[in-house]
Length: 362
Ligand SMILES: CC(C)(COP(=O)(O)OP(=O)(O)OC[C@H]1O[C@@H](n2cnc3c(N)ncnc32)[C@H](O)[C@@H]1OP(=O)(O)O)[C@@H](O)C(=O)NCCC(=O)NCCSC(=O)C[C@H](O)C(=O)O
Ligand SMILES: [Mg+2]
Image (tube, rainbow, N blue to C red; front, side):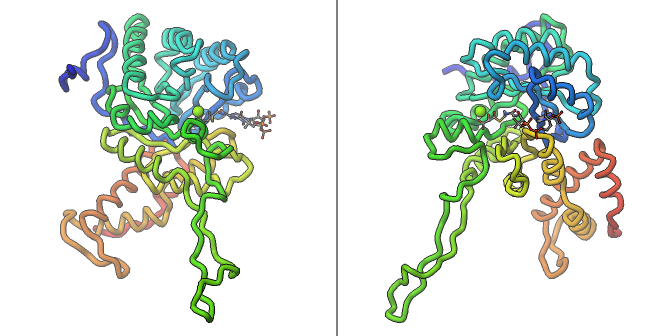
């Protein structure tokens, strides 16, 4: 089997295409907000959403009716050409690589709005070859259209084969920006017995042991606590490790129970704590939840700054509030402090909140 040399990764795949990036920029992307560009009511809201959300994503794939695929593609071109996105990123989700629409998605979008498109989300990615296909075609289209910065690729992890190949997918191209979990398609592909778009399931649980009766035997009639478990823990953790290994960014995906904002917040927070940088938003109500959850809390930043100040040159160990802090906890604190600094650059309210935190002297 022949392999590319490391340096080959940094040569454009088409003459005249922009040079691949060596690092994927850490741009805030707490919420990737999905809209259907063929839905006039939704589309009309997009210009006013600029600046309120980190990423606006024109969705062309599932949730757009087959009869509306062309209207969605053309609608996205119109919206992108007419809108100044300022600090907000513009992404799209193209149709799947085996669909009758994907080639027209790419050959229409790149020449028309390629300079404005930051990231293309590719659904149902199974293996590195899927990324190689999109990588080469993007390079050719960028070269032809004179696009000056490479459009990045984001893959959705929504097949069992995709999960099995996750490491290779992350490393398949310098365009790889990140991965999202696609729990609905993944559940179907794995033949999980669920009927939901993300989130937990009351049947996936562990039950407390039965207490012993006076006879020393388990009292199977006694009431026992049950603890609902997280269906997605394994996949999210695997995705986070693969992304961290390759210097790209992991995201939770959709939470379909729009009305259950509490469970949505829990799902988002679990993903944040495990290492995800953001999530999808399907409805405007989910943007605020994502922005709140994926921004470090005041308490975390206050503590992190105390640790940074107390640790001086970053070596050794100190006690703060009865707990030992050392090089490793300092590194965790720096993840939060650096994220807060990045977010403060684009979110004036958050900047004011973080600026108001009393910072200890070093
Ligand atoms: C989920 C929805 C179908 C709900 O729509 P609707 O019933 O219209 O909700 P509301 O009445 O509460 O809407 C209030 C107003 O807000 C506008 N709206 C709704 N959603 C959006 C949006 N995403 N962006 C902008 N504006 C939005 C409505 O038009 C109402 O406006 P008005 O009447 O003027 O007040 C709908 O929210 C929706 O379709 N959301 C997107 C769904 C989607 O993109 N799904 C695909 C991603 S999930 C997936 O693909 C699964 C994944 O791949 C996997 O495998 O896991
Ligand atoms: Mg899907």
